[in-house]
Image 1: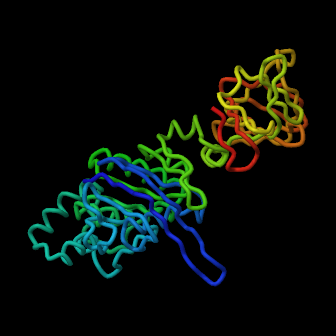
Image 2: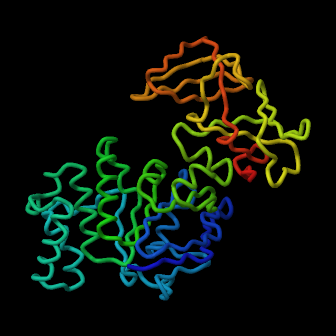
Length: 365
């Protein structure tokens, strides 16, 4: 195992239409045995970062260290890493045992040592009864476990996973997430995981790195990322449904800060430590932090229900508010009808305030 230091990593691609900065000055420390996820939309730079760590791409500048060892210019085979891709990439003509052993054979490991390592890895991944099967005789989840085992059997310093669950159906993804989490708890190998699925990142990671346009937007624990997003992009990207955003202005009335938006005026408990240069601001509120209140409750906001969706144990209600709409999350037993007028209450302690209106709008703390 090893701690990983990513130091001012930059990657640019030059083409006929100009230069694309796929990764911009990424700096990150990953502790020995930590599970860190790189998450963001397509094209944000997360896979480019992973490929550079693996040695499959050459950085334009910056360096990568495993412990004290600078591995930036080493060939992939000399980095002592293991990588699992979105595709299982199993050899169809080989058995599970042969697929697991393949990397060891290429490294000249003897037959007895290979057999010992397979015997140790197979029960961990529940593959011991499948060792003589071919990949075509396995389910998708079983193939993915073989791909994981082929990487783990090498005892790598760093384990790299590039969207390994995206080819699985929803039920199997949930199952494999639990298996991956249990595997990491058992092995405590340094793992760097790339995904566009924020739910995977939230459930698996010790820390999450949120990226956009090649720039690291925020790094923190899942709870920090969800509860204290650094900017509007992070706030909207993390969470399902995403955070409601209401654009308006931040004003001081009677010595108290008030957020004023279309059809809404929300007194805030205190002014932010730093006031924005202009009054334009965005108020963010999670769907679960909006409450239904009596119509005569202090500060109640009157609004109309447009759509109500059942999502298992929950319902999502789309509420018309001013010129826009917000989503309210309630238990499934709360039934609201389209066209119904409701009263909403916002807990000032659970609100998020951002300076400006764009995705780069920073949180006001």
